[in-house]
Each structure stands twice: as C-alpha cells, then as structure tokens.
Image 1 (cartoon, rainbow, N blue to C red):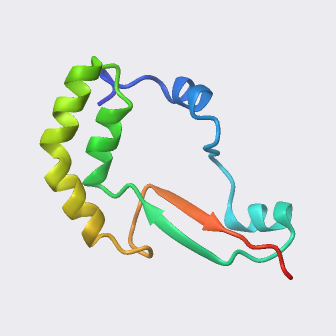
Image 2 (image 1 turned 90 degrees about the vertical axis):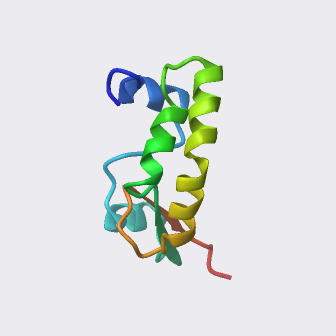
Amino acid sequence: MKPLCPPEAEVMAEWGHVRRGYTLDQLTALIGFPCQSSATFINPLTVVCHDVAFSRLSPLKRQLLCTALSPLTWVSYWLHKPESLGTETAYAWQKPA
C-alpha cells in the first residue's frame, strides 16, 4: 500500500491524537493509576480498508474501494475479539472516585 498511502509522519500530523511508542507501563506511570481495560483493533483483514481510507486515492476511488471492501471489513470486525491480535491497541482509564 506504500505507493497509495501517505508517509506515517503526514498521517500523524493530520491525526495527531494517535501516539506511537508508549508501553502500557509508561502510560500507566504518566496517568498515575491502573488501566481499566484495553482492546485491540485494526486486524490483518480490516487494515486493508483502513489503509484505503487514508490513501492518496481520489475521494471517489476511496469511497468505491471502501464500499467494495465493506463486507469483508464488517465480518472481520464482527469476528475480532478485544484480546485478539491487532495492529493497534486502545486503553481506557477512569479516575478513582
């Protein structure tokens, strides 16, 4: 997908809420209390549509490809469990009462 996708630095500049390189221990130390839960997402099948969505293709081509890939993407998300292998992980913390 490299010929179609912008470099990671360009994606991070636009979608700056994503952070790479932190371990769970480092995040827990920064936040100051234990992680409540976590879940993986973007599995080996959903990554195709994910990359198409962020590609340099024209908006119409992106929409057509994502629409064509949507059955595979939806089934992949439906089958994906939070503890399954995923290329990204989301963590949740809640302030203690």
